[in-house]
Image 1 (cartoon, rainbow, N blue to C red):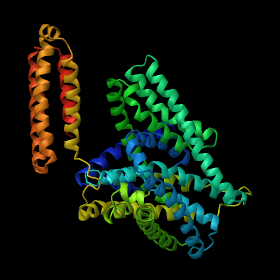
Image 2: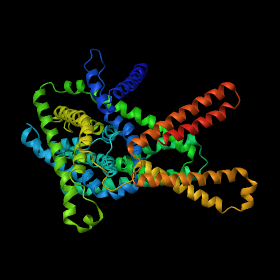
Image 3: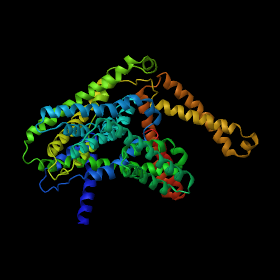
Image 4: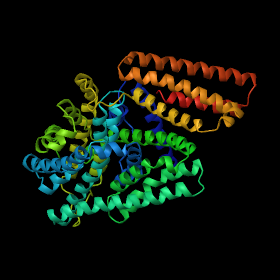
Amino acid sequence: MVHDYLLLTVGLLLAVLLLVMVGQKLKISYPIFLVTAGLLLSFIPGMPHIRIDPNLVFLIFLPPILYEAAWYTSWHDFWRWKRPISLLAFGLVFFTSIVVAYFSVAFIPGFTLALGFLLGGIISPPDAVAATSVLKGVKIPKRLLTILEGESLVNDASSLIVVKFALAAILTGHFSLQEAVGDFFLLAGMGIVVGLLIAVVVYAIHKYLPTTPSIDTAMTLLTPYLMYVGAEHFHFSGVMAVVSGGLFLSYRSHRMLTHQSRLQATSVWHTLIFLINGTVFILIGLELPIILEDLENVSKTEVILHGLAISLLIIGLRFVWTYISAHLPRLLFKSIRETEKSPGWKGPFIISFAAMRGVVSLAAVFSIPLLLTNGESFPQRSVMLLITFVVIMITLVGQGLLLPFVVKWLNMKEIDGVASDEEQLAGIQLQLNKTTLNYLSKKSQDQLVENRLLTNYKASLENEISNLEEKVSSLEYDEIENNDIILFHQELHNIFTIQRNELARLRKEKLFSDEILRKQGEKIDLSEAQIT
């Protein structure tokens, strides 16, 4: 039995790697390609049916996905755009749940208001990984990307809390809006408290105890689970705990981790999250046979039509909510008009279109129990399974494939006048070099004369500062076109290739230690990573 599970796991991971490579060759975002491939693979005769265990997704997969997303989210940008993020992550989730609830009662036979709220909570949160993966390689304003990533961080918590209350109402037959609102803020707020408390302890361990890069990396892998399980143990929001704790530690990572720990942990995390996301998305496609098996006495065509209608409904609701939340506060408050530039119509359009459902929705719908407390079958469970799957396919595959073309068609420029990545990197390096030169200038002349290495380093800094000042000035006045930057980077790639070939030649001649040559190769890798 163990060997069968191991073989299935290895086969699944190998399939993910091969399919991602095929998707890259076809220039299709890997979440879209893996879901579609999983769907096609599920119909192959003899293919084993794999049922997603919600506990596996919520406990094993969700914490590291959220933690990694929080780690790479800028707290400054997150707080700056807290209003649109909150309106989408909380307001839109509740708005969608309410409208879907009443729509379901009106058009789907046998649906009650509580079942409608349950379905609305399940399909309301967009998937963080899908949006960022699809938008990778497509230029959109930093403001929009920050809002989308911030929304995806928080909306899982609000949607899962809606699902929790809706399930409780169905199972117990009791629901109080006043109690639900109070409990919502309690669950979310205390989840944040638990996450921050654990983050403070983890920060102290990293900073004050004699850790190594391997210990630090292992601790980063354990941290999201400590936060999630700790909060869920007290029946608070594990999602909010991981997000808040991740943001706290990310902001202070330079104080608690050495450069070796950061480099090692980054490599490990990139690989881990890639495998988790790939596995999750291919599992979504493989779930269709399981879902269809549960629909024995129900018209599948009718349920699919309901799924299409609800998909169009939630897409339309997002457009309405996004445009209202983007422009209404500006009309009501003069302070917002004075401090923020108008988002126009293109920005809200991209945010509205980039809302693809994914693993959280599927895990939430599979978490619906098979039976009620009285032993009867849970009403409409199989119908909600297929509707959720249809919504995921329409939004993830349909909108996901169209999103890059929509972004290119809109051709939206940076809203807030944010400098290009190239200009910012040059500006940061210039400031670092000036700080270093200022430090060296305070050294006595005798120290510099005695240490020729320091003297040469100071001279190289002065020369590099002059070059960087010219580069920043050119970039600021648009004297360097984007094609020139691309050509410059291509030449740097060629230079790094030549340097690696030279290292290989030196290794063959055995003039230098392999260990030193390897370290020099790592420096070249880091230099190339800066322009990748």
